[in-house]
Length: 82
Length: 82
Image 1 (cartoon, chains in turn red, purple):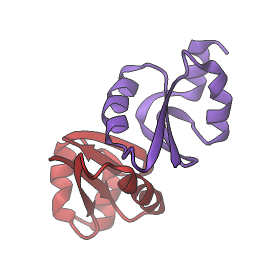
Image 2: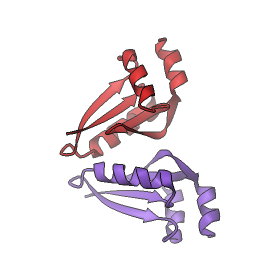
Image 3: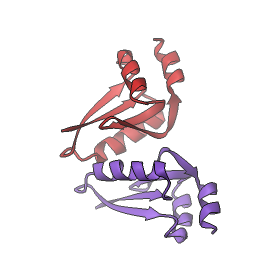
């Protein structure tokens, strides 16, 4: 099955987007994983390589979609202190 | 059923987002409508009132999510010459 990854950093914009968008994704088409960089700073590198420049972001089968704007990846890295 | 509206203006960023995101939306949860402002400039007002500030944008049950950035609504209005 195709993979959907929702990357976020716990901000309010992220949580609102997570709730609505994650629920809207068709589970028959995408296996959804939700990654919170605060809990998984080791996933930042992978996300940036996939083209994620801000959060919240949704990676659909390898293509990054930036949803509204919560924080840039530079800001995320400052907060999680990688 | 809840309503999902995908607003776009035919730009490349819009079309890539449309194809992948529209297909990812669960049709059991959302009735999806796709609106191209070039063909339906009369829908611009409704979109702006719902909070759409740029395209492509996805309105899920009345909440606007801006997906990446193709063009601002000001740019859209210039192109469709409302």
